[in-house]
Image 1 (tube, rainbow, N blue to C red):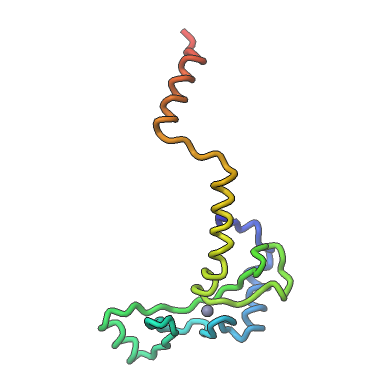
Image 2 (image 1 turned 180 degrees about the vertical axis):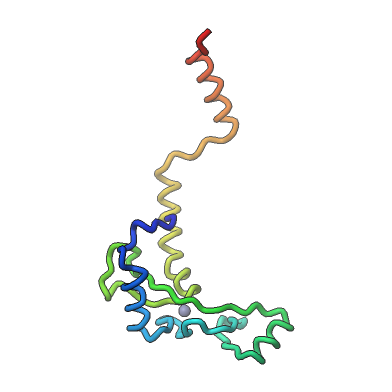
Length: 138
Ligand SMILES: [Zn+2]
């Protein structure tokens, strides 16, 4: 689903999301990383927080350093359901992983039930038909 700001409560950004982040201790409730932490995930997917020295070492070794930006996820994917029990603070990775199966399901349903967009060849045929049906006024 494309990002639709209108789905969110008008107080989402200023009130709801900050309140939930505070409730969850400004940490991802799934993996425990803290807001604005800097570091990387190792080959076992474990978070490695970096101080300035380690960050410098990591960069020299080609490791990409990221900054954690916490978000608040709707567990049921319903952006209008702002019940506290439906909201969890998650890091980018955990948020994407949480949303992934829902997005795949949505994409599958869209493909299954929507008319496929016409190919260029089909568009050309439609255009040529239109010329026959609607001749230009002389
Ligand atoms: Zn996380």
